[in-house]
Each structure stands twice: as structure tokens, then as C-alpha cells.
Image (cartoon, rainbow, N blue to C red; front, side, top):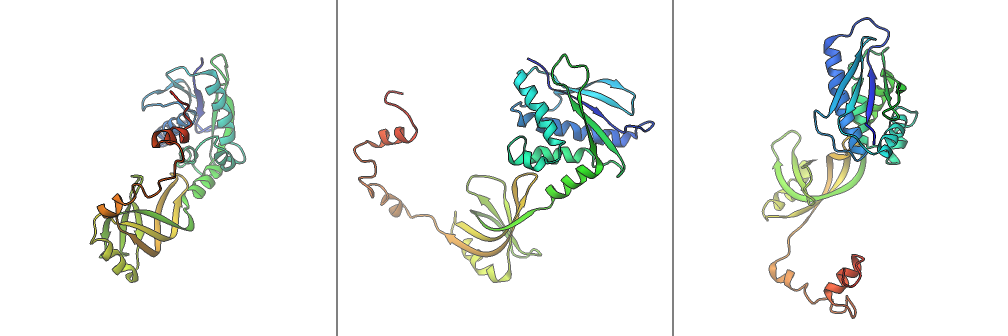
Length: 273
């Protein structure tokens, strides 16, 4: 067992540290470390990263996760931080080394820095290590990451959900769609030509809409930011009589198996499990 321990060095080469910048730096560093730990499979609550071992070298300190973790997790953390500060953090995200959310939180650490500033971050390989593996992070690097992640990726696509609310008098008019999986509301910007279709959808409860258009995808949060609507299709719920007709409509679907045996087979369960 060992501890996740990261050292931060802020404002190197300068005398003193502006208190407001120090506060912003520490607050954002804590948010990043919680997201970083979550990617390693460690659930960290607010207040469980402790700052210690302060030194007056333009302000540096250790941040220690209070609970011990498996050595494999610490080693994975060292590799992840190395990839995060390396030349291709986007590729590391794509490979699953860490999430885009963590990369965004990392990029926000240096948001308040001056353009010519750098800071240092390093992770200890184990509890016996006296020095961390330092990595330099420049303002330019994190600014480029922020710009990339905060610029939505726009692609033509479709979203499906229940009509939650409609604001025809807004500028521009929009509706809010509730995804069928219960996720966050999706803002869908409509045109005057789509007014009648949306109006018809409000007449029947639980109408499911298929909305087609330019989907703006937020890279940092991995969520849909909004949809510029080009077309709308409404699907109405089945009447009770129509739903009942589904039962027995495929009598040979499970072969010689009972419904229960067929479901167990799909789940990969053996008899008696």
C-alpha cells in the first residue's frame, strides 16, 4: 500500500505569491486532483486531499490523499500524470488513460497565470520517494488545451427524448428535450418553420421526439451542449391495445427454451446459477 502524493510548485523564480492567484491555483488544483483520482478508480471526497510540507520557494507543497491505496494505483497515477503533461494528452484521453473532464480541470489550474509563467507538478512514485517526478507546465500549453476543450465539436446527428419545455417566445425560440435515459436537459434551437411540429407534440403527453440537426458536443464534459434543429419527427406512445398485441406475436422466438431459460442464456448464466 502507498499514498497518492503530488507536489505543486507555483510562481517559480519570483518573489512572493499574490494571494488571490494562490487561492485560485489551490482551489482548482484540488478539483483536478479529485477528478484525477476518480480516473484511477479512487473516490475522493472534498477535504480528503491534504496540503503539507510547505516551502517558501515561490510557494510549493505536497498534496496527499489521506487514505492508502494499492501500489498499482500509485504507479498508474504516475503514468497518467506523465501522459497528461506530455506532448499528446488528447491521445491519452482517447486511450482511456484519463478522462476529458480531468484534462479540462487540469487545464484550468493555470488559468490565472501570466502568459510568461509556468508551474511545476510532480507525483511521488511511492511513500519512500524523497523527490517527485517533476513536470513543467506552461501557460501556453494549458491555454491551448482549454481552447480545444471549450470549443464545441459540431456534427450533424440526432437526439431522442421527451419534450420537457418549449419557449416559442424566446430569441431564438428553443425547446428542452429530456433524454430517455434521464440525462440532463438538451437545449434545441428551433426555427419558425418548425413551430407547428413542436406545437403538435405538446398536445399528447409523453410524445417522444427525434430531433435532427447540428449537434454541439462539449468535449470537456462529454455532453451535448445544444442542437441547431433542422428536422423533427414525433413518435406517439402505443395505446394499451397495441401494447397487448405484442405478447405472443413471435411464438417461436426462443425455440425450445422457456422465456426464463432464454433470458438466462442471453445473460451467460448456466443452469442452477
